[in-house]
Image 1: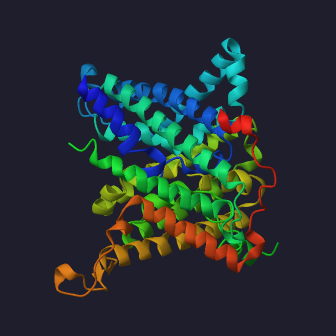
Image 2 (image 1 turned 120 degrees about the vertical axis):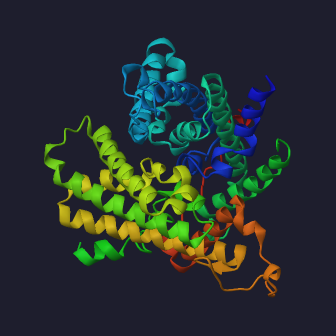
Length: 203
Length: 217
């Protein structure tokens, strides 16, 4: 069990997607103006990553990995160069399906997400989670834990950043720093704080 | 708009990273050294120009409802080609870039330009616009990469510029420059500097502070 806890904590704190790997920064910066939208985005991220990473893992081991076609007498076939294309398609499909399901069975949650759900198709953090899963050879349960952990890390970071930015609405900043500039500085300081977690889960 | 303007405007005036806020994700992660930053910049510019050309050529035959998925497939195919070329000829660098070459697919800069410009313009201007945006992105990437490598390791493109203490020189490397936070700070300073020079880029102050109830959620 401790192996799974390690993966979860590592994905959430040490290898925090936006703050340590700079992934998904576009949505991270654009949608962190208000705490309300940030919470919605965070929940959507946990849901989508928890679904797509294990699904990518199944597709990769069953179809794409080197030697996956050995049962059909084709042990030398290696389709791993197609993984990028497959993962993108999978993410687009998963996001679309999640949206349709939510609209049908939980309209209130769907309304809360608003435009963020379709936007997640081009979120680099989600694609990166699938690619990291391949690079680190996670098993199916491990990749599920990894997906949830990465999503939770993203949610934590974006909610914290939005809380600080909401406070900054009252601050008198120099003109050039207003908006994007100060957000970069804030993200830098948060990233500095998160790098301290690196000592906690170190092997 | 005159053609050369399409090329020069995205360099500073409408820079994709600092003004349009596109393609930030990859621009920070690969800038620990000048070499990886330059490789990434060239790869992205090639993908951007080629995908703009292809999408601009098929723009009259592209149904509106499936255009996003077609664009993503075109971009992803080009990225796979670039990735394979890098692995074949520049294996060491491609190992250091790890997943970030693949992530050009979801780089908002590529999709933003094809969606925002190439889809509704002929191939010539579309390629010029793509090249201009690619160069604007490269400018920021190379600048940040050079600063981080110079002060983090005392080298540029792997050649020693400031001899470090370890090698008997005088320069103590700033190891913060090699860590993630420094990229945020540097890009923040770049944005600050550019917007002080060009005040028309500044954002309007948020006149309406968020309500107390929302801050508590």
